[in-house]
Length: 146
Image (cartoon, rainbow, N blue to C red; front, side):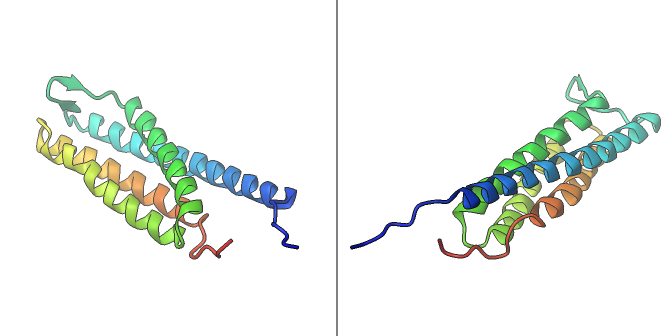
């Protein structure tokens, strides 16, 4: 007779716990990064850097909103990779670094002053430097076969 292993409540609870930990980490890192990027935007505004791309003005609070959105996307990616790759941490770091590099391309090529571009790129890099390591620390270096 062959027995088929079934998931136990403990495994389900652990997985739910891990998901909550990742979301909690994303929330904390997101808030820290949002404060940092908002400070960058505020300093730029105080220094008379025109936060304008094309004809659209970027309001300083949008730095926080978009940073929190990025942290949520990062958490979703971390959860996806946690269960689908053999090396979740490595895959997450490589993927997010590539996505960060791609995310600064629109800033670098935007119809904006050099100071505005530097401000936007700096904010992206600061947010990534805070959020990526925080979320990566919650992922296993190697996932064991189940």
